[in-house]
Image (cartoon, rainbow, N blue to C red; front, top):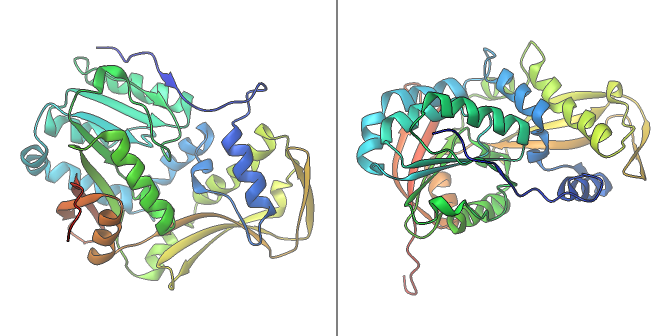
Length: 328
């Protein structure tokens, strides 16, 4: 079945500007230190650059996750079962999705992504690969509860959140997202989620600062997007990409660092940055078994099964929606 008409839920003003993007950028640029939520890295250009990142030698998570999906299909089928609507949060190009869909015989596929053109292309491609599978792409900010297409509301659901995107968020935001996912999917749902694991610092930093500079362009694209969509005048050539391990918070941080003093406008407001000052653009938290379980349980999900690749670099976790209890 061809993909259905896309449901667009992004909040645009009369001039076509994403209100949430503008608000987050202005708030983030006004802060000390400056910081912008990582989800805004993923416009169409950013989404394509991220796909390019997954192909560089240093970036191990995609290869490790594919290994799990390719080798554990029978276990997925047994624990998930057929007939679920698979709802993928931040679907991107959906390159890993066919491995899951082949394993579990789903009733429908609902990709959610904020990058509309990229989403449409990926949904059309997946429809060609699975012509009998109903596909319902939804353009939305999955950080909030999403109203799913009415054709899938009565189906049991499996949330799919690969790629350790959950690691981009601080704990409070990650828990909020997991709770909103539970609200989106319903009380009898399951969640299959990727989480990267703590490992050698040199390996971690290289994964976010590859020798070819693809990750640097991905990071700098955020400044270009701000200029394009918010009337910005950021001198992109005066910024450089920086990736560093923060052991206290168990995360790799990405920053845009000013190489000299600069001044610029965004959406009619003026800003400055001193040489060496940064805009914090992304976190990638890394986990161990206990921190994974704690995060999922706080977000309303009970872990059922955990898989890792052969080198134990990356993990996929299947969790059930937790049944609320009034007593311990």
